[in-house]
Image (cartoon, rainbow, N blue to C red):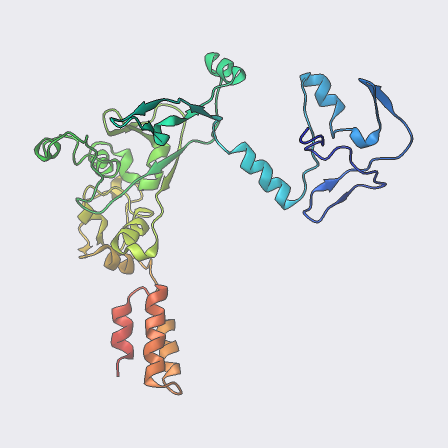
Length: 331
């Protein structure tokens, strides 16, 4: 009760048929049949009934409200509520001090603490070691990077020389994939995204080892096309099998290994960039449609409009090789 009124707007109105209000929330049918019940000296009719399910109340023996959820806003509310995170509580520790002049000083920052709240039911669930969440099938996120661009972790108090002398400095999940291809014959038949199917990444020793049981699905980190070489490297990782160095990824001889007998050293053409390797493998378009569009516009558009069109294509990041398009349309 707030100011003598129910904060949930009870009693409701009598309604002949269930319907939805302007915000798509359900308005349930409440018949004016004259039936009442007396509770604590108060006469209650259908306007005071909270939506519920009698079977669920009997099964769980708990207070449980029910709502009919078939509208988009209601579903969004439920998903936001389920995934809102852990229960939190704000605790206040009040302490005042006085300066030399006798003026009280209040530290408003340290006065309040945002703490994690563990209820009795959650504490029991965790003490009994029940599963907190279930994910099936398991997904392994695969990181990758350009040469000498791996992420390095270090403590705040470590000096640069100590960090650079660490043995694990160059051992990332991606570079250890190269080492696994050197060690295991079976790994040479797998792409980077297929590695979790047959191998498991052990973080404690930072190595790939053959999987003894189960399986996992690999997912490479997404990068937008605007990242340049990193994006083209990601394109190659979806098809290249068994490389042992970055230069092997940039090499292409027209065919790839399909069996153990087909696995040989990468003796094909070695391209200077990952982008050129993508063109050699036919992974990128030839930008012919953009060349045709600009040539067609040149018959009726002014030079200023053509330059503006080309700049628009550059800003939209749709052309695979802008320099080649420029060479073909420059006149």
